[in-house]
Image (spheres, rainbow, N blue to C red):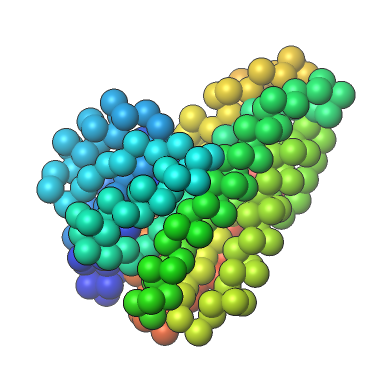
Length: 245
């Protein structure tokens, strides 16, 4: 049933050059989907598309730029005719304590984690409403369900994703599927840009934390996408065994 419901779907993924986005793209193409991969790092996108073949394309995209999301949507429709699914997956996590005053990092998280989701929705929603069907997913975090010291701004952006997506679901529930994914600690590049000495002193390089494989999140996304037309998976929360928050 999974393959039957995914075959030939056109699926746009932001944050697709590595991590869970790339893992999901590989699985989706194996299931017969057509994928449109978006990220800032063109070299990695190009390499991934060469691996995946004719059912994949890429569009170099900075989700903090509204025009980039509009261009992504237009190119996807030009190549494949329509868009069935948008997964707003791009995000960054340079966490720090408020007293450290990493304001530029706060701004980047707001631009990518919140505005990127809004720009993605804005770009694809008119197309989906005109077709009378579609599916929009966004990656929040367990930090969007509960906060803790040192993750205040990151958590705020992920709470915002939760609010945006839950409101969107209520507004378009008759025609468009809406799903929010809340991953716990995952093996990915997320957090590689942490510069806070306090965070590093508290958590080290995060290597000792229990983590899920990237494919665990990819499988959750595929589960949500593969449901029959009258079933909407609203939320999926995943944590590795041993993670309590």
